[in-house]
Figure 1: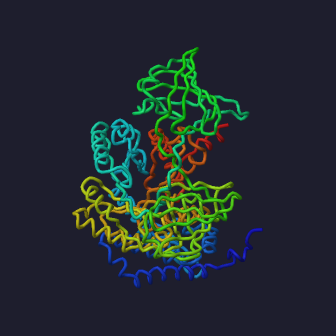
Figure 2: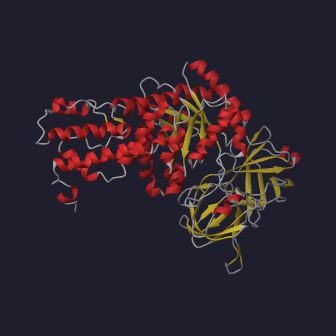
Figure 3: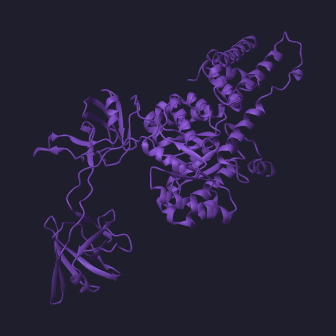
Length: 623
């Protein structure tokens, strides 16, 4: 049952509406006056943006839903698109309400237009050009692409990305290094010259990212298995690359690589059978399928586990010969966790290990693993939540000591989840006193200064963090660099207005909605609400937004998009820039995104529906 008429205030008079609108206007002016130190702290050119943000925040302190319903019922603006010009929107509606009151004789035609509507949107467009460069022909929203490591040696990839619609190259300084970054930038310079298209460069500093430490390697075991259908029938054999003990890499993907004697390898011929007993004592066969440079391809219809020293017996008529499998690399290991398990997180980075169990399956020693930032141990408290591996494993801190944390696992996939090394750790409710810029960040900024147009600021949390980056850039002579604040923690989201005002001290600034970490920090059920609020606050401060994380991810990875991600990409038109991540089909993803954004801008701009003519309507009336 819906709300009653009284609940939505249909019985309110124009006097009531005037009083509420007047009170909102007064709140906005009071905020501007009382917080003048805030907007006066930014350059004069950004005063209007800072004031508008304060006006919008003052307006949003009230629950306006009943007022909005009343205004809409009278055919007036419901203030639902007031972000970029909050005071102008309220003043304009207030003027019309006053005109409509019965005791006011003035004609509504005499209500003058309120300045500010065009100015707010113009400021956002100007700030977007300053940060991201001019919009490409026919499309207002820019496209940013994260560079994969192979881009350092693939000039054609960068050329194709630029030709397909990339407007900004993103290089993540958490990966690769200065030599690779420099090659990427030189490839971009060539692509610019060849295509005639401009392209900005964003480089992210890694920030103090908390991750899991190493895990003790497992035994040196190689495992292969053929592909089977739903009935267990083999549909494709396992492909095994046999190579000399100074191994040559397989020319194609292999299920396993076995180092063997060079002399024995030389005697193999296509069609030979090789028999062995694997680590479980099961007899297995390999059939030699093809010779290639550096080795021999063999195929197996059976699953096998191979350890160093396994004897391979060649059978060809009466001819027999054997060799032993050489040294194998230790197998990577993970820690399997289920709800109710205990996980020990250690301050040191000694390799972690799975739980040790007795013969009855009872845990004798819980699983353990280190954390990369030992200083966080001083800031953590029992009862605080913790999330591991992009939120796939959840837990609660039960005990804290100087050397370790005791965590109760509360959420995993059904049947348990595997935790590996170098996985992200999120502490959404902990007050971490980590430095905003790490020593590596400061070193990377030396490279970024003079080579990039924008610097992405990872894991920013407070306005003091923003000021620290601005001060360090000024010291390097990079005061003209644009900055992009990556909103990826709950604390950054909760302090977003302060961050936006602090960012106004830079010549150009933007925010990135890092939806992956935000979903973990704020909860998946709140992500849609949180990204909406970031869009509102950014527009109120005339700050361009970069919409990031998993945009067309399946298309970039597999070459075929999901239906849901096409809709998500269309929603991204409300931002000023959309970021694509790397993948083998990322060039296709750029082309598809360009097409989606070009089509959608005829229908939507920010929160406003754009009512272009519809062929659906034409066809209806023509029939």
